[in-house]
Image (cartoon, rainbow, N blue to C red; front, side):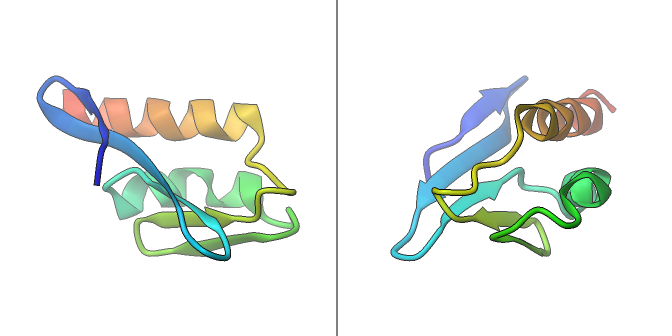
Amino acid sequence: MPALVYRGKPLLSVMRAKKHIGVYPFSPDAVSAVADALAGHPGIGLDKGTIRYQPNHPLPDDVVRALVRARREQIDG
């Protein structure tokens, strides 16, 4: 799975599946960090380490920024 890399570690990957788009930050903790911000958004599903959404209901920009920030903080230690 192709991924953006930060300091030699996978930061984020996005893949299109048949029925959804999956965002993989390679960290259940990063998903948990944005879970409250996604509550109530239609067509969005959370799983351990994965966020799935429908193309007609994209992730809000601020949530993507928060997800990347959470993952970068984990990598930075």
